[in-house]
Length: 171
Ligand code: FES
Image 1 (spheres, rainbow, N blue to C red):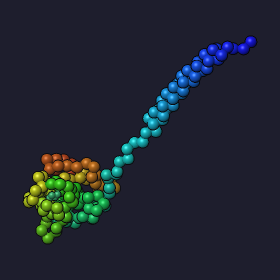
Image 2 (tube, rainbow, N blue to C red; image 1 turned 30 degrees about the horizontal axis):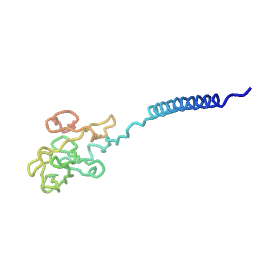
Image 3 (spheres, helix red, strand yellow; image 1 turned 90 degrees about the vertical axis):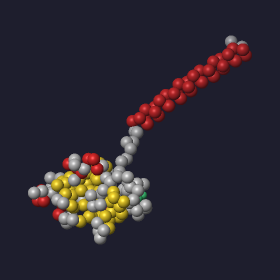
Image 4 (cartoon, helix red, strand yellow; image 1 turned 90 degrees about the horizontal axis):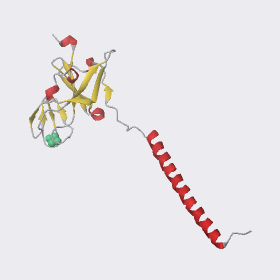
């Protein structure tokens, strides 16, 4: 016994609908798996390092400003009045990098002429506030560390990380 042409037509349509159903299920399974995979293997954002070892406190003579880390870390290390601190070299006007002029004892911004004293306090030009300081500390071995990712505006300069008071020079 053979199927009638009408029956053939009916089965063909049913098969077609079944195929569509399976395709839809497979599609959503694939999409779900892909989303799960993305969730599993999502990469953490890569952050640039912000810490660096800056040698020993004795590397910085009293009354000096060092720019040895200016190109690499945008930092000046200042040793003044028994304290070591790291000035972040970003002008508070529009962000240019100031230079240190030892003869004039000041930082000068090449862009619009702002001037900052040795402590980083603005005294001329359009800069609206002092330069920021980066966190400094000593490790157990006596090495000096700087973290440019932690910075202090002037109202926080009295906090411990904003400057390192050198024991020998404290009294
Ligand atoms: S960016 Fe320094 S004075 Fe304008």
